[in-house]
Length: 95
Image 1 (cartoon, rainbow, N blue to C red):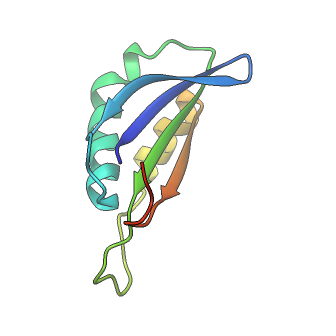
Image 2: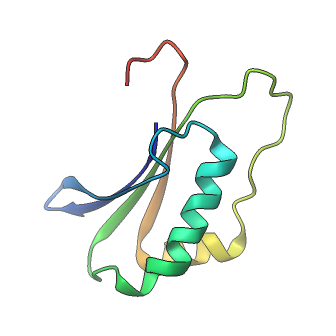
């Protein structure tokens, strides 16, 4: 999958940016979101609801743990009116 940044207008969303195309690793996708917000937060048009749709696949060898959603990331999302959607897919999903 990838990380899609979507802008919501009149109840429907449109893709604003696509990050980490083809990545399915949740930890990498959250890191990519942090980097993107650091560089792009000041340029996002205000007055909109935003969605960061993180499409990931669970790790085969996972036994716990995962990325940390840092307070700084969460605060930026609140300030910019960004909701984070965690969209989990299996290897069998046809995306």
